[in-house]
Image 1: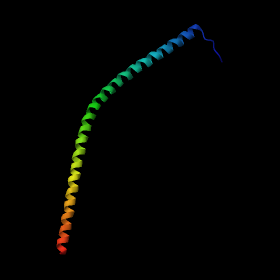
Image 2 (image 1 turned 120 degrees about the vertical axis):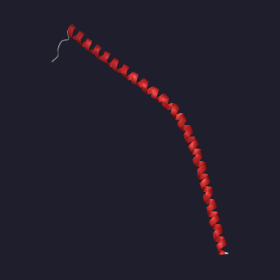
Image 3 (image 1 turned 90 degrees about the horizontal axis):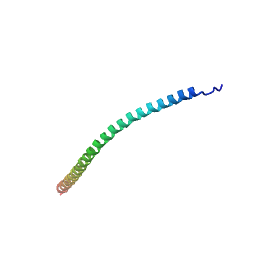
Length: 90
């Protein structure tokens, strides 16, 4: 059933719509404030990421040196064992 829209009903609807938009605007202000806090957190994280990158680079270098030392030690051990086997068979 269609109802006629009087000026009073249109004004009331207009007020409700305006109120709704004001409430939405307030919520967006809160969201904007929270995003500002998140942005500040990411700024701190970027600084710590640079530190983390340098630490990981140093760790990678240390691990590479350790693996090379381990490989040299194992090769030396195999050569020593081969020498002992050859010397024992003579």
